Length: 297
Image 1 (tube, rainbow, N blue to C red):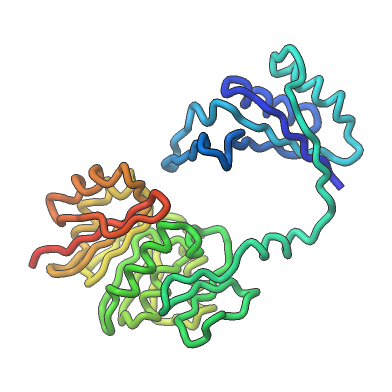
Image 2: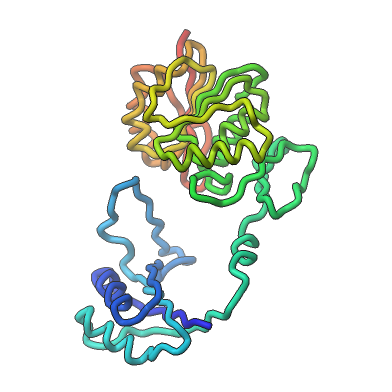
């Protein structure tokens, strides 16, 4: 058994208190929004490599301790190290021994993309065997169908992919989009990613879904050719930087869809692609959008 200690902290105290708790015996420390689940909840978003200097006005510092830890002493020492006059208000919860694998798996249910497609973890039975069922477990690479941006792209592919078309998935992550495109009838699919682990994960996921024709490679290697469909589910800054590259891979008359973009970032991305392709917002889900466009013939 362990103990989770939940301590209230102001924005300018949270980091110092977190570090101090690790120095005084905590096994792990995390920060949460004290207003989570209320109208004052403040979501945090960031690009890779960026640092949010200010998270929440009111945070909860969650520290995990062994059952035999001297909590009173550890908390008092941590408060002193953090420069606090006293230990902040806190509460303690017991964390019982559990089957953590089973608990984690229980949080991932089959995901319905639409009537045609489901994403199904390996420990579940497909709820609709007649649909296109993609077996996908949470792992090292991004893309299990649960994130709004992946869901938006999969929905678009279900409508956009036609038999015999060619598809480029730039930033393939888990390979889910390329696997879906293949199962939807694409004759040629190339997935690429800057992360070597993502490329290997895509290969493994493709094999477990009996997808053998898709190709996977590092985006550090030159990607050549034009495609009927180019899809990229990354983030706003890299999408803007890649605008000339991605636009060049769309054949005349071909289609481009982008996601990983927050609603308030739409105009920034649309402007970046304007010299080559006119994009528009095709759909929005939970604050994220999908941008779509066709290349002039």
